[in-house]
Image (cartoon, helix red, strand yellow):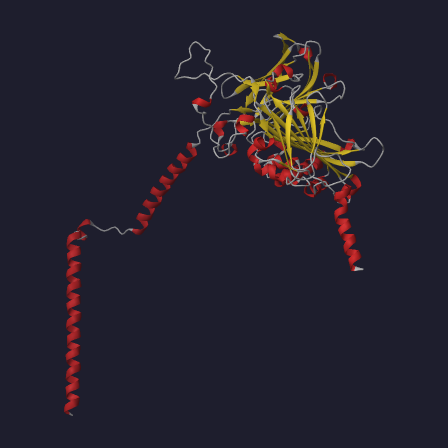
Length: 599
């Protein structure tokens, strides 16, 4: 009987891992100038009934308990670092839907009966996620929280969306490091020990030219009418510099190669024997997974049966061949257009080597539908201005978009100064809709959303003025002279400007900015402290002397030398008197002793 109970308990322990669904995918896309885009994707799900019963299956328990406690029905979290170079790298990966602005960006739909209850649960959610991911998301307070009206839409299936409250917060000053990657990997079933997650190393990830980590949780209801699922999707996108990533670990410091190893261009008329002008690279650099990531791929994260197999997708030039080194059998699919798909073996090392290929021109890549630039103009410590340039490179299609700006409370824009122009011609009609929520000092920031229209082949320029507030000296950070970070603006392209086949929304974000504020002289408080301390010491010393000292006339005080000599003479006389008295006492004792003997 005990054996049967023990067997049933083991079956109940391991059954959730068998019934869940999990998949992994790695996409490798070479970019111009010896850059490589590596896009990791991990998906896991569980049924909503099991989730409500706290039977999480492949869903991470640590995150699931936070979502249940805070009533968060849909969650989107981003950790980003660097800048995507759209001019050289083309369209953003995943149409920008899985990337965030510089630092940390968080938005979620919270189920609540009122705005106050939603704010309380949002605060609990940010604090819990801060502890889970070792980040500073607990600093997302009311001054950094907004409620977007047009930018974000629900990705999941919700039966009653009217009770959901959308809240958004960002920390552009947050530094992303390995402390955030480690809890990210712990959410995976294999914890980064098997599958494509074995390639995620902090030294390589955070040395990339651009990288973003994303976590998306949403309910999904299949079209066949089966039970709804709660899906978690984790993505890691990075752009690696092959020359820097493949540098030898024994000598990580970049050094110029020896002269004899450089391919010199001797066709130049100014060439000399003692100089070398390197030839321009005519091919993209060869690379292997093991050298780029510092380790080979170890098998697959095989945790369930019947799910999509773990695979690697490699984009190559036409006719370009790759070489695979594997310890176990694997499967290869060639679509014929330079798209290779490899199904990973269940165990053993797996490595891909790609030789040199022709130079990749930026014009051959998929170009973005819109380019956005944001700069700060003006001078002085009191006022400034913002200039946003939205460029539509298409000559045939116009673009409708939503522009979201979240500004800190100490940066107060003047809405009446908002102007729009197209090709240097004023165009007020380009602003089709405006949503504005002014800031309240030390309570909330500015929320500005605009619905804009950019004609084909045109550039829309938005400008507005703002005023800089003066902070209290306790509100300045230690590096106040560096400036204050302003979160990137978010641009969402509407349905008429997205892919016609998939109708996928396109997002892009501008870079963050540094706002210089009037900064006081922080040495003045210390000067005041030193001055007051000196005054207090002088006053205390004077009063103490008046109380303790005894005042006498000058003629009553003997000279210091005579007093010292007198004291020494008195000490010598006293010593002599003590010795004489001691000798007398000894003689008297001796006389008494002799008298006793005679008797």
